[in-house]
Image (cartoon, rainbow, N blue to C red):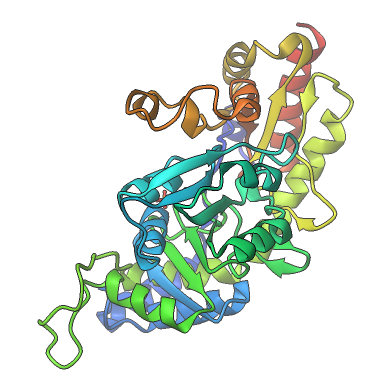
Length: 379
Ligand SMILES: *Cc1c(COP(=O)(O)O)cnc(C)c1O
């Protein structure tokens, strides 16, 4: 390790790319298979991803947001429909509902996992409710059994936003295979990456056929140019799929490193009663996409100060998500009220995440913990 590594800022995330990624990319180039239709890597990535997540089918798409939009469009959601969505998430989850004209209904979170609280669903059910979108936030799976039971009882579809949770398991089963549709992202900071990219998973052959058509301009069957629907172009390129095949071969290694990092931080930060650290419920394998924590007690209102002091020490951090119900653009449109999900609001402004890239070494992790401890010990 060079001296420069000691003084360099430790980033919150960095992709792990190596020789295999270069090799597969070169193969795709040599095949002349760069676009969406001819490449062998696309088919292979879909097959291997489906197999990895225990889903019967997987379809590549251009990113996680288009995976989610493809899901809401495939379910025929539209004006007059309501969709219950975990309020604390990347706003792409909500945009996917709004694109269709349906109304998202934000659902408050559990205080420990920060995932959608199944106990909150009943109160928000109306005759217009059609679907639920759960988000496996920061790599911790949602408590799915009560959600699935509720959905079954009321005839609702379930979409899993698994953009942050590739490889996470709920009672031994991989997320993305538990609901009607699973959506993944392969953006550069996600568990595995293709630069930009996404995946749509399902066990339902009818949803599969409709999603396949909508994803690629809904070309006709007997005459290609007699279109069957108003389709989208949400295709992934074969170059991205080549990267994805290589990344998928190292996904368990990446997860092992995410878990190593979480264990390292957890052991050393547990002693601070001013911190709320990530949890791992008995039903869960948490893949710790990001090591997300919340400040409390005397630090509760000092998140921004703590983040800037860490930055000065060479430790990059990022603030937690702002819930749907706190976004001005939605409050102004009368879609929600700031106080609609009080638990999410309470945690949002106290939380941030620490560097969580899979290649962080012990020296870097030690620097993060030492810098953070200095702030917490001498406020
Ligand atoms: C990243 C992310 C998305 C969007 O994925 P993109 O590939 O960036 O479009 C959606 N939902 C969640 C929870 C995410 O983390």
